[in-house]
Figure 1: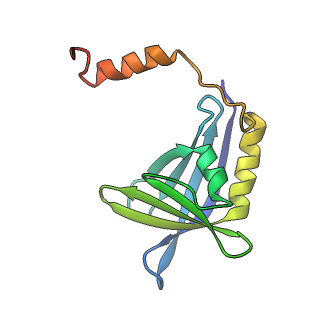
Figure 2: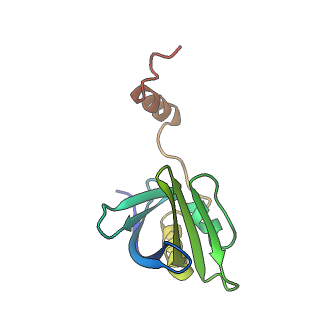
Length: 142
């Protein structure tokens, strides 16, 4: 069994410059998937929503603007005490603000499980790719 790291924290879902509300977020890291972190947002009245993105992106986003595509992070304030997280989906964008210290503590715990830079892809990449392609209807292509 792989080592895991879990944390719970409050973040603020920003609706506008005048309105935000607190949401509980579960942070998860599994040493069996050493490149990824999972954030599960518990929104009032909705099913939890999980976003998976690179642990390295979270590390980078705590000190400088980072991210391409669906996930963007950047530190806020001169003291870098907060992080702005933007999540983009076909349904729209969500902006979440979080205190940096709990994220740093979470990352420090993940570093004990798998030190940054020492991640190793597990499994047979060629076989995993073949499995993915065969389940998406591409097995007859060509």
